[in-house]
Image 1 (cartoon, helix red, strand yellow):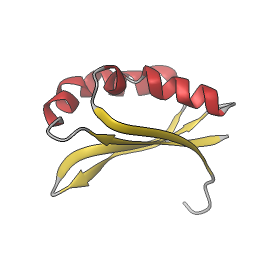
Image 2 (tube, one colour):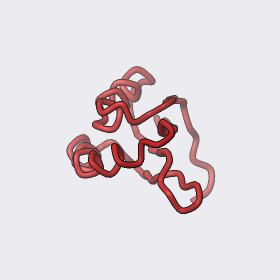
Image 3 (cartoon, rainbow, N blue to C red):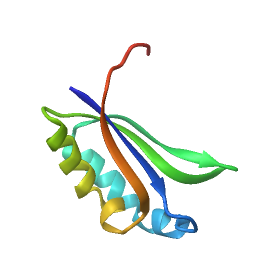
Length: 89
């Protein structure tokens, strides 16, 4: 099952994102459940994340999101995980 992890950064937290980016990307590679991902942008600056993960349960997807180094670093103002259905693409 696919889940969308939708995260918004805390205002003024770009440096946290930049400092933690390598660990975040390594986590994505290590876990192997990310199907697509990328940052949200405002005025050309990264300000959040959309990550589509494939997991057996909502709880597993939530656990993945909680284990993200970005989350551990306190980057996010909000984070939600919801079931997602791919229709196009």
